[in-house]
Image (tube, rainbow, N blue to C red; front, side):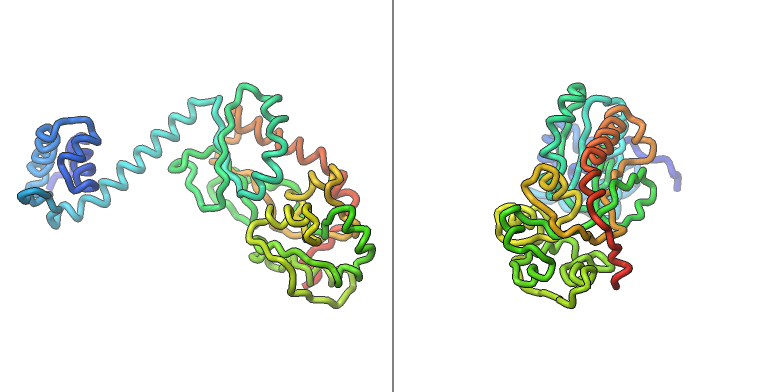
Length: 313
């Protein structure tokens, strides 16, 4: 049996008809007449030497051969479309599509975007706040910022600043709880988005770093890290704030970190993009801007003593 593929137009007609299970709807999608689409499918069946559809009175259904061909045809066109979009993006030095988690977007990116827009008016930024696993080609994304351990095989992966966590609260609340021991009576806020960290960076670990035998379990719990920070800003309690998500509030005085001991973790926010894409002008500009913004608040970290959670486990 020859390996020569049939014409792409015939395979495309089959793919559309198999997805819609209707020649009329497939013809509408491809902007051809039903007769033209039917002709393409008949030519494909002739090329195969077997029918792909059973023509019923008011419907069609796939034959065994059609069922065999349909998944591969659909995957093939989706892959081809994604590759074409990726090739098109390589010619675009103006648009930059970034995906980051909702918390990082709300607490780190959004408050700073005006500065980036002022510095790079030629770049059109687009954001997708999401934590799902993504495919750069399929999802038409240029840069992803993700938190965790990695590794990130096949990608350009730049770890951003070392990550730490420490108790943060409003200045008013800090007056109520002047010592680490007094926090045992405070409302402690839990950020459950970091429950995956190993070793854990939780309240029990922080108290252990302070030499206090206390393993609290009560207090408001949030699945989104930015919600935990917002609760601390509202005076609900004391949050174990993550560096990237509280550092601007600390620098601006909306939150304070009165106890200068923070838990360090090897998990990092990473700047991710396909290998080679880091040299595209808009990607490089965004990366360099992020690094410069991190440096602006480095003095906050300098005031802390970082204790690695791994040393306390």
